[in-house]
Length: 340
Image (cartoon, rainbow, N blue to C red):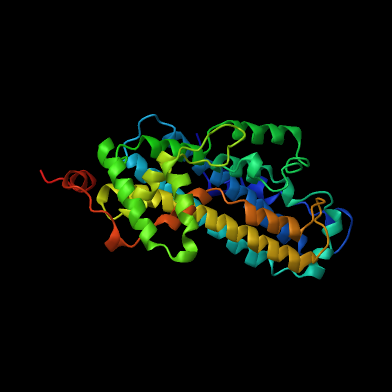
């Protein structure tokens, strides 16, 4: 067996010969089409890596009993951090794309029809794996209308499986720290916390108390008619408890996991808005090459497509540290380092 060579290992013959500008085929001058192709190929490669990371996280999260004080949780947090770092790169790549002027784009834009980023099945599959449901999508009636059947099947398969958001809900529900540990203490804790939260609200915020009760103290029906929430009341209580008492050693990694999910949403939102602004800069009010309404579609999708918004919403229920209920000695001992 021969020695491995860099060129062969990376399959550079395939990668470097995978750019075929349409303008070249028609003997037209469109210098920036090469940049356009390479940028989008790079996006699709990064999407592939994001799938690799999300799939590995979901495999861990699917385990019926994951030790929250084990290397597995550290692995999940580490890979979530890698995902957010990759997403930052996707945002930064827009800077390179914007070195192309609108007139540079017009040199080849019409040759692309009806090809469009809207046909990126990898990105739609990624959104499904993370937890974006069909009923929560903007323009759901046509979001797969331009895809090939084999790609539609891939997306529908992802939608039929447990998403990361659903797995996080199950993980939170089964966490042994369900605050506090004894049922009677748990009821007393949340009654006390509700009073402290109510006292922290300004007059204009009093409606938040009703939302607090609906989200944290009442189990929302999970029927199709009322399937408006992805996190159960129990999962929300545990997640809020983690946010409130994240300083305890046992809660630090769970908090980093929740924070990592919020960072993913933030970076996805940044990427969508950068894309939207770039499209407006490039084509103004014209429709996209795939037939979408261009900037208006992208803005509506960016406003709606927050996957972990229910976790972010829990920040509405935080109170100041000095006003937090005091935890029992037994619970503090369980959440901290135990001396031997």
